[in-house]
Amino acid sequence: MKLKFGDIIEFKKYEDMTEAETSFIINGLFPRYGKVREIRNDGYFYIEYCGYVFNPESVARIIKSADIDCCFIVQENFYGLYIGGSGDLVSDKDRAKIYESSDKASDEALAMRLSSWDIIPYDD
Image (cartoon, rainbow, N blue to C red):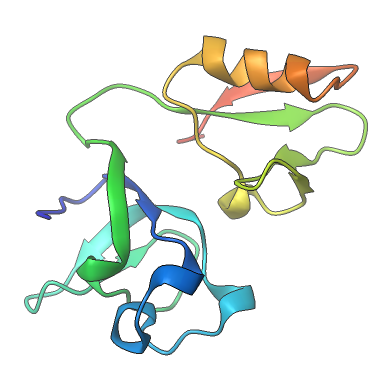
């Protein structure tokens, strides 16, 4: 998979990756999503807000190509938590589930029965 600076990617499930694909990062620290901030000559890359280097084989899919406009996350308004990749609420923005449209994000917030939420661009 050819990654570009600014691509938003989803990683494979940690349990489904080899040690080489996880780059020996422990499960609790391995992110679910990220935005590519640097690509090394060997193809390994870094994501925003994370100091680890990642194997390109750990990527499940490109959610948003750097050439496409916007992706969204949901932040509930009471505690400021985000809807996470496994359908729970998480405190870290980098662990938030990324949606391709604001409608899909809003539908999931409704399904979770959040009382109040904001749909915000992932890039902000």
